Length: 249
Image 1 (spheres, one colour):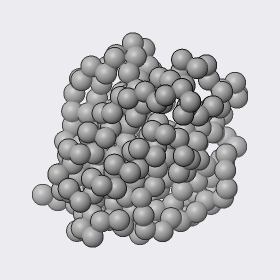
Image 2 (spheres, rainbow, N blue to C red; image 1 turned 180 degrees about the vertical axis):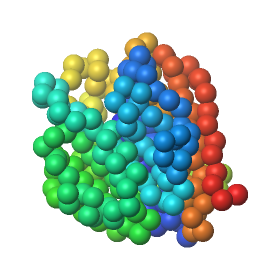
Image 3 (tube, helix red, strand yellow; image 1 turned 135 degrees about the vertical axis):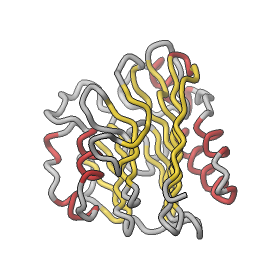
Image 4 (tube, rainbow, N blue to C red; image 1 turned 60 degrees about the vertical axis):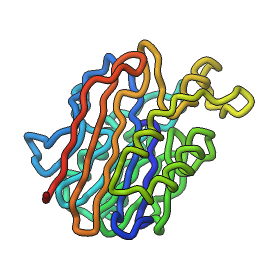
């Protein structure tokens, strides 16, 4: 997952709204978002290589999403970051308690957003201690929360404007589909070659081998109903499948 924008208590009828793109090598095996057969209350896509997920929600309104920290050349951790989200969604701990017990050094660099329905918390093993976030709109890519990368600033601004269109979610998908490359003078320096900095500067990343594999919009209303839609993509952004799930309706 390489771009997440979250509205937490920023809309009077939808206390949690999420728009996210997952960027990955297309060859990595993945299951489209669905209710999990082994944990039926979880709605999420699934990484079939390590068994975790990049983003998911439960029928009770628990939410979890993870991104990696871009740090080329750093040795990988011994555990998969997708376990972080999976374990939280499968459990019943508060977000704060879950984060307080993490063995952070066991994972490659991560950013983690968790909500137990009462709080939204953020944590990273490359930044400050975990924090509960006040009401607002937040953006996350492959650096720390609200890092001012151009694509994140654009997505944050457009997401805030799109909130007024709920329950219609199309404006969020329009944001996630933006494949404009940032001018070189505005690119962040994250340690990857220039051609990769250009490729990864777009909200929607497209190439033959690596790119945006899934665009996901989640909205949880004040009654606890979850609206979850995911659209998947193949090489060069070719549309593949979609999954639309609503609970309690």
